[in-house]
Image 1 (tube, rainbow, N blue to C red):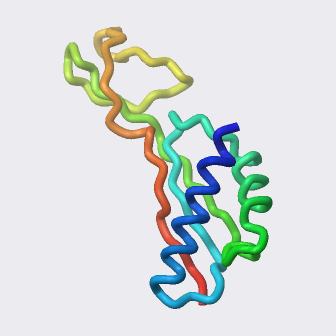
Image 2: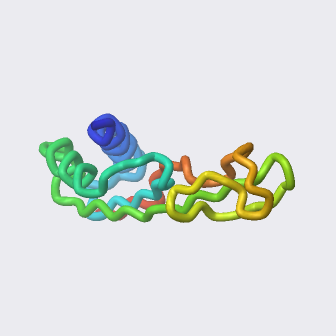
Amino acid sequence: MHEFALIANIIKICEETAQKHGLNRIDTVRICIGKMRQVVPETMQFAFSVAAKETLCEAADLEMEFLPIRMRCKECQYEFFVEDKLFQCPACKSGALQVIHGQELYIKSIEGE
């Protein structure tokens, strides 16, 4: 369950950012997660609720946006979104692929007062 480690880092960044900008509490944390990260949304929410206790994020909502997997074929240079976890170029059927998007994990925004 790597979600707990991810959430611990997210809360640390949120608290540092809040302190830097003079926020007394955080109301909403929005994160973007590439689908290749294989996080379970329910586990992320649970980890956030546990790890946020006694922090500026304690009453915050965690909003997650999942980003699609985009690949480029190394053989024919065709770019495509991965559907149904089929990691094969739809144009030439090659399995030699480069990940363009889908491994991201970042904080999109933090709202608070």
